[in-house]
Length: 309
Picture 1 (cartoon, rainbow, N blue to C red):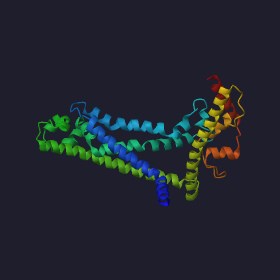
Picture 2: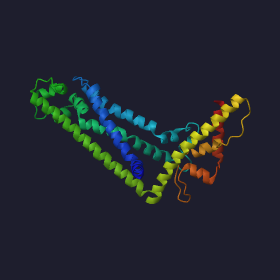
Picture 3: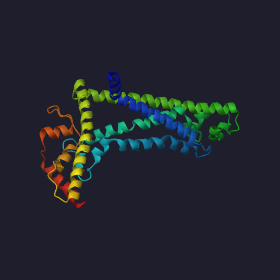
Picture 4: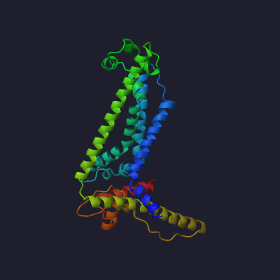
């Protein structure tokens, strides 16, 4: 039992690494599936468009999905049209760009994995580059190759050129080598940029390493208990309402946060050294709900909108 708990604790502590590893395996599998099943290079003047679409379209879709599944995206933008001050609070106007940058960086992980795997495989790049009409690129690819290379490069992927099979294979290997070089350059650049970003964030940290570890643990525990509390209160409220409906009687008082409290607890958290609050909910509970005139006006607008809806 102790061994099982130890393994479970290790898995929970390394869930980020495990998650990224699973994402990498899923990306490799998806890329191979696309290459074998869906991808068929047309070997025509459409090579460039076809190859680039297969290279970049899945990356774009993964980027959009990254924004969709990131809860911070919705926390940042929910209600911003009604109250622009939610994303541009007074005195913290740059906060939006900082948070949006964090969301974007985390959403870029999957697209970068896709591009890296696709470039290392080389199939999409080979098709796209074989259809190029750029004289400089043709000179780079066909230098030292037979003259047919200049006219029939787009047929290389299908092996239908009038060149010898050896020359055709050499061209394919050359294009795949270029793709793999770009893939490794992308991996190295992304890794170095990630290291610089993390180092910069840690150097600018307002808290110590131990306090940051505690902060992360607290945030995780609060998230888990918040979801459980939501479910518990939702069950109790729905049970009370259904019971009153079928028994045809007036409901009793059910304790719930005020509208303004929901708004305050939904704000993005900003750490303040003078007040050690580890989340927005922590700040609201410790300090209570004190609305400024601007916040009161916003709350009235939001309540009017809810009533009219």
